[in-house]
Image (cartoon, rainbow, N blue to C red; front, side, top):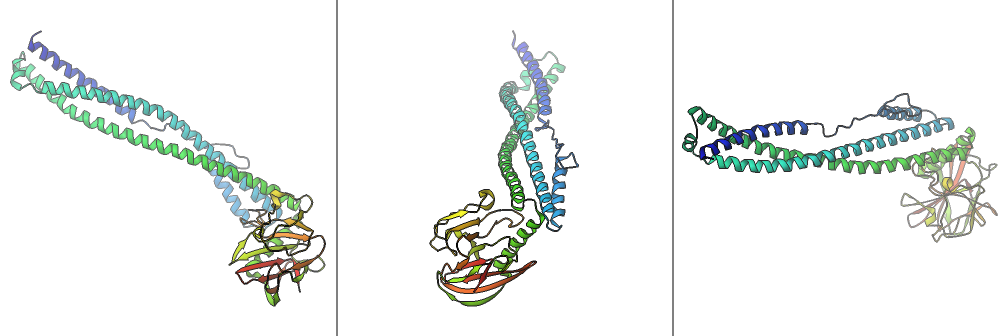
Length: 408
């Protein structure tokens, strides 16, 4: 084969490769421009109690219902309805979170395959680009005079020069597009890495919602068990809880009585005949504060023999574990009616739960000081009478409360 024929063949080859690369990049750009997350998002579900099919509207519906019910007067029926709506709201959130996870997992699987294919295409494209640059460089070294000698005519000479110019321009575009494609690829990888992290975050959120749902269901069962589905008992328990919290945060009228020593008698547990106000039965509510902060009495009372009242539920009323060094304010044998932190998030005690220990003595109604201090007698007006109580200020920032008792 002559030199002229070889150069002509090489020129034709460059022209064919140029058109082929244009076709490859047109196809590549089209496929890369596709939506990287083609999974359709659907939020239509059937949630019991919700009049809407759209999941987000269901969540808004239950939030609105809870807000409306919170404005109503507290009754057992309204509280149960609030709990039911809260349970349904959490269930809707769980459904929405599961749906988000499923869609993201599908997106990640689809895009992982797409990115794998794209990586292969970029690898092949880079190799073609390198070969293309080499070929263009070799042809580009030919001087116009050499091309003229190898051409059959002036028309052929001009065509070959034009093809060479087009190929060189296309090479520059090819380099830019390949680099841009790599940048886009890296951006897509980052996007889907973030989606993987979001899946892990949603899984953690799902665990929180699931635990919250269990707690809400337990709270409803506890409320029904405590009240025995009786409106009058519910109102008594609510009044008692509200009165106890009002007293320890400054709601009662108090009078200094005297200085007392540890073990001194400071009064007796009130019975219904002595002081029926805000009490569901004869018992002592013992509470401890230190420097203005509520404390767990278990950390102050010393270990002793005690029993729980019949049918005591640890889930509702909370077990106790005394491990301090102070004596108990009542005589043994001791019966525990309710522990510290009981009924957390309930309609009675809110987020903190029960702030003290409810107890009773099976041998005596006497109440004693657990430590030296200054004794104050107090009274709080209730809807059905007066709640009598005592408090003792100790010299180390400690404050002990004795509610539902008659100080003397």
